[in-house]
Length: 178
Image (cartoon, rainbow, N blue to C red; front, top):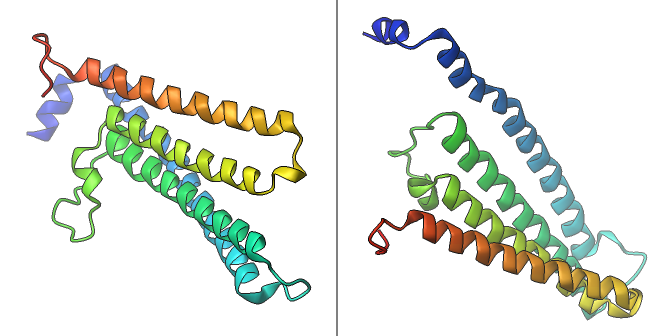
């Protein structure tokens, strides 16, 4: 039966469809990036629990290291969303329906949902960076703080626009949402 289906699909169409596998090295590269972030997280954690004996951490120093840890986790979550969600959406089904650890969000992942989730993750990461800047505001020029805040606001507006467009696209012709 499968051989019969291959004969019905033109060679060019099969080649184009098979080209989705060219994304596999990209997703594998993101897994390598994930490993780098785990290493970075462990270094930051070591700094927090006493690896930097050369100076005592004050409350601000502790807060900045904790924010750096949160930042690494959020970026790592972003990598997982892109790797797993992108592979599932654009390359091949993982067939994890019966796996007890399948993430809930993977049940309804598609390109649209992935874009909104990514936008929200980027806003979260931007928020952490902005908070770190505000905590250390005396070390930054005003124009740097204004630029970071402006970029964050742009991310917020972009996420709202993406979600709004997604909502418009997913509505049926009669105007009622699914």
